[in-house]
Length: 140
Image (cartoon, rainbow, N blue to C red; front, side, top):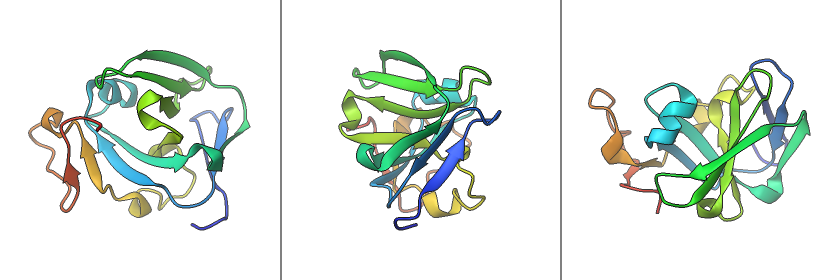
């Protein structure tokens, strides 16, 4: 990874993002919000310093709400195709949470093996815990 920008974008290609450097965290999230915005059993995320993150093109729409953690969280998504690209919020401080599935690198999931699972008690029964990942009941 290093200083070479890693890029990604939405399904239709109208909104593009990039970040440089190494993620400060790699996490699966089993919260109910992540289930809804991913349309799946959990979301796979990397947290990158907000100073290393940038919007390359397009203007995402946002929606903010009180998350399962009790803090405000904002989802940034493509206004055309609806792909959720990243999230920001009070709980993340100066970290931007990037949805790994939007990255262009075909190996993005391989290099983003989670070191933590958030809201682990919400995990569906047939999804096993990631070996070696810290299991947390909330985000903190």
